Image (cartoon, rainbow, N blue to C red; front, side):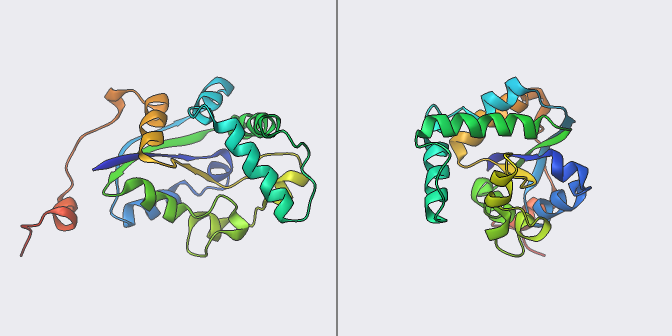
Length: 193
């Protein structure tokens, strides 16, 4: 079983979507093993997003490419400078209100959670996903307002990233190890009536 981090961001909390978002993961067969509502501070947000030392460059390059694909001029051609601007917007966004941090466990937890969440940009996310169903937000709208994209949830991008992120948001005592009867139905090869 693998674990992944999900954070319901301030816009998800303010829009009363906590229960709906949790139910999407529960219905998929994932198991909730840790959860807390909290106010994240700027230091935690910065550590979270910069776990990967190449984060600034990667995010900056993606943002620059996104501008170019839309026929727009990026605000800066230096990917690191763009990445730093993105981080400042994310710190302001994530610290704007309470968040709900969760650890979900299951087979293929990371890709399954990302599939349920949908693409980072809600406007282009598939219908049936959290982002695709609950917000019309777009990169263009966020960029025009000089703010982070409001996409309701964060989901770890890889198993390695999930391990590092979980360690930032939770201590080992907060993550429970327990059994659910339904896990036998989903995973046990010997299960039968």
